[in-house]
Image (tube, rainbow, N blue to C red):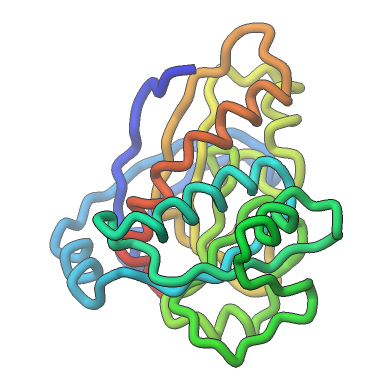
Length: 226
């Protein structure tokens, strides 16, 4: 699967937020009208710089690929994006938990998250639980969500399944900043589009999108807004 286009990577504020015209309901196709504000992006990028202290929330194989990417970035001194990495996960059988234990990453067991440590930003990938407001407020630069659809299309659970079920020809990955008490609602920071191959299964599409998480690194490099 090859990218068929890249939407403009940008920081968004209230005056330059993406305008979305969409039908009623959360699972309808939206029209993206992107506005550019280079001076605002420059201001955001220069306000503070990585490397970041990251708290990662995830559970399944899709989330595991993002965790591996962040772990590799932490160990890459030249990248200079990740300073420290700790993990929050769910059940004992979760792939993310097994990986964290294997690589001796500090591990938190949801919902008992130790916030005594200092973190800069959170990253949520396929976690399935609403992140508590006190946790979001603890992150100076907010909490990013990696979502395998072109939000606002297919908000909520099983976006890859809905992409296949409804015969979408194009999908993608969205990096957004979460807000309390709502799933997949918040400023969109980046999106990347991908063509859905004919006769592709949900498992195949999920595996492909999972490894295409390079835009997460660029979002962290640019510093998330809060």
